[in-house]
Image (cartoon, rainbow, N blue to C red; front, side, top):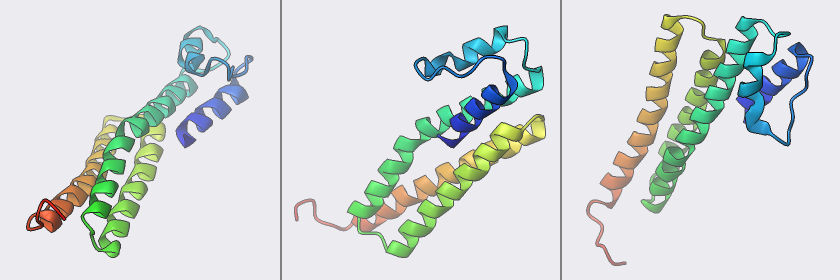
Length: 138
């Protein structure tokens, strides 16, 4: 949500128009025709919206990993450390995504993405290992 709020505030600050909350998905479409915003700012707004969309796309994986860890009875330290690490990687990912203007920045963004996904996968593997020798009926 933070990347979207940033995109909206940037749009409102630089555009002669204002963001229309009744049509929230129209923001990207309006950018192309808005001549009051420079291209670098338009690109930043587009990247912020992309970061938000990616966060929503990743949310299910993270939620499922945390639920799997809880159901499997993972140690709280590991569950919290990997969850916190995932959230920190997402914050860093969003900062890099929004501010990136180079291929090297895109590569670091990809690395941060895989770090976060790796933490989710670690939760799934640890949960599976915890449940491996558990009878199916309790």
